[in-house]
Image 1 (cartoon, one colour):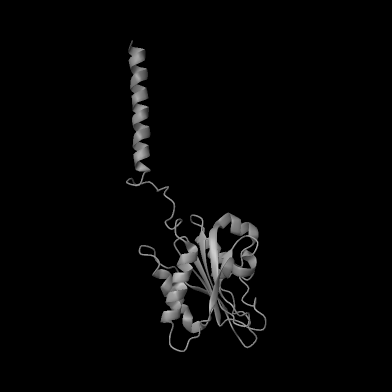
Image 2 (cartoon, one colour; image 1 turned 180 degrees about the vertical axis):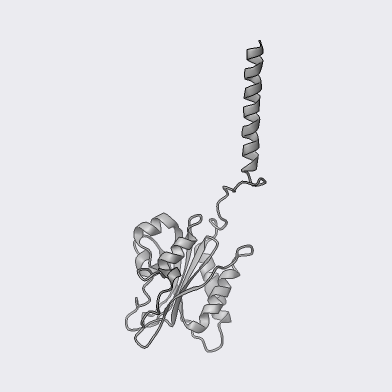
Length: 204
């Protein structure tokens, strides 16, 4: 009889310990949360369109923003549009869209990339490295600067006039209420021949 009581007590004790551990690992406990990053349900194409509408309305006077077309990015075209190889796009990205000048003689592109949980920093680094986004992708024309910045699970790439950078980054931040915009990495700056500025340790 005593042996049966001991087995029951041990079983109850073990169940209690499992329950306590479960509570501590939940949202209200001290353990790490398993909740995914916010933003997976956001419409990337719509967000990009809202950013571009605001950019066109709020850039400094005299800054030209061309008419753009919204293009969906996939594994087949991701290298050309945002500098990600097909395998990395499939592994790290949920979806992406670019707003690109409709005229090929205008070097202008803004891309919004929705990443898998906790992948935005890696995506930012891949785009900003030397083998990433090609700022010379246009024929005989170059953007003033190319930058990449993260905000939560989103990454924004912009090859734009230098005077438009602050506006583009600001409009990205306005899409979120509880997520701060990260540091801006400028990985390209146009010289006389469109040469790349020296890469920083962060972009390698």
